[in-house]
Length: 444
Image (cartoon, rainbow, N blue to C red):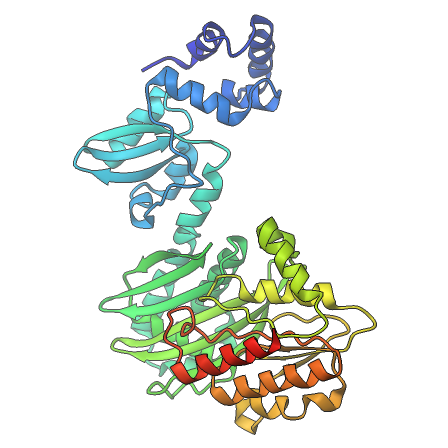
């Protein structure tokens, strides 16, 4: 394998840098101890991408782009986290030819030898960007060692405790128990990694903890399944749900302050074969509003802005979970939120608080539903209305009626029809689809 001391000479021979630039980089490297590539990038002699392409050519190794490659967490975690961070390496894939291991510096012979010892078997090497490695390692390890340590403590405590779990959960001393620290680690890692959801899924003999990051679920498997009951019960307490009710689905919500940010957590439980599955949707209320320019392509943004400027009509924003419906609608509200407009939203729940806007959260338990609110919303003299979801024909008809009513007064309604997954999967009932299409046709 090529010595790192000769990389600069190869770059000079390839005409990528000058002798003066190489000498400047070597002088700086002698002072800082950095790798030559890091020095060249820091001194702006070469861009990182250009240096990596040259280095891959010099070393005769593939260059793997960590921004586009799809990694499996189980494979990545074949290498202990401490070793991965220290050696700046991670397992990329496995094939009949062995493991493909990405390194920031494949010319480091000692690091390669240690990786061979830790992983065993046949190993092929690849080059990856050192600037992206910490981000990828954070995503796939996700504080695994921290969570696993607390899981072991909790499992031992449950094994020797003679008390019923529900009684322990309601104890004032429980706030210092391992289960609380497990949840704290889960939430902190989720916020740090910008996860939208946390899944807690008891399976046969294991507990699966998964986080949805950039639309993709990242999984951590915990061998101690019985701690699932403790985690779920604690979460139910936090959401004000019935701990003893494990036969029926429940929904709740609570707020947390995590890493200095206010997080609104929506909790959903579902009875499954091995216990209860819990999904936690995380909404960062401290996060500033995202501009439409950040979520829409220029051409689509221009068309959407033109629609928002119409004096009347109705806008339906549809798509599967995580596709950006809420971000788009709140971006539109931000554009329309001026002192001369009365804006009312009907949501389940109110996801982000906005100034000057009247936001109503539905509460089905007391009869405050989408349809019941929409029947009276015109008495509030609105200019713009946002309907969080249209789950049934009655709500769709009322929203269409409001659009027509506001059309007669020259005002602009804004409505969202998420239809959950049904519309995205083209499973919406024919009658409702034809009704919506006919109303839109009349408005046009």
